[in-house]
Image 1: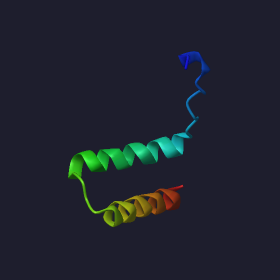
Image 2: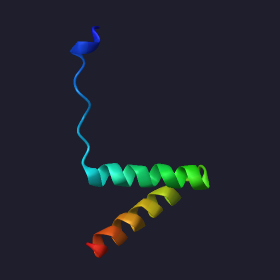
Image 3: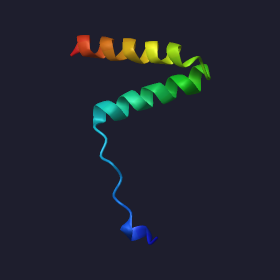
Image 4: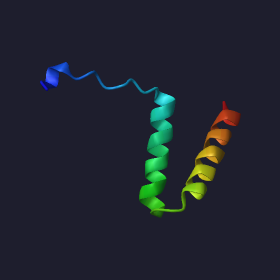
Length: 53
């Protein structure tokens, strides 16, 4: 398949991009953890950000 036929990259909102960056940064800093722990951290971070707005 020709590369020009490929659909464009999906547009990601800044909020999603920031959340993903935050998750990847935590993963880089703390290494792999059980998924439940990562999910808990992400939910707590999202909750904190929502309260700050």
